[in-house]
Image (cartoon, rainbow, N blue to C red; front, side, top):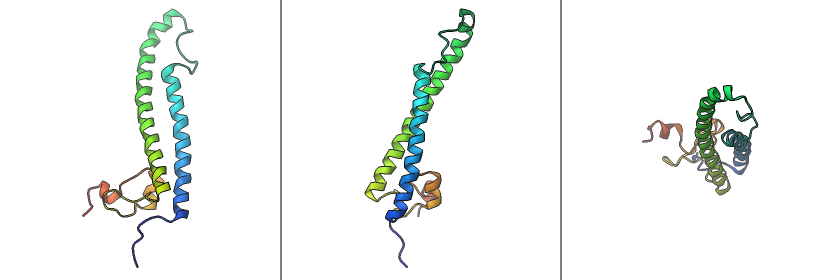
Length: 126
């Protein structure tokens, strides 16, 4: 029996649906983080009394910095998901970029933007 070299169109469609679902959630999360950074979420310290404002400015700066880091990470995640969708369209989705073999369905369901099989990730590709 020959080894499969790519996933079937039906399998690719299943993965596409998973990717689109994750992408929609990721974009919503990104929008929330952008709102925190820009202060457009309405929960800023601008309308509090001056006494509390001094105490909360430090926490506000810290949370905006953290939100900024999270937003960067989320943007990177979104770009990985978008690249995975391109691979689905090109019918190259699920092929390990190191070994050239199919990445297990279990791994792709857990990490749908994966480009490495577990063997390659662990450095076991021989």
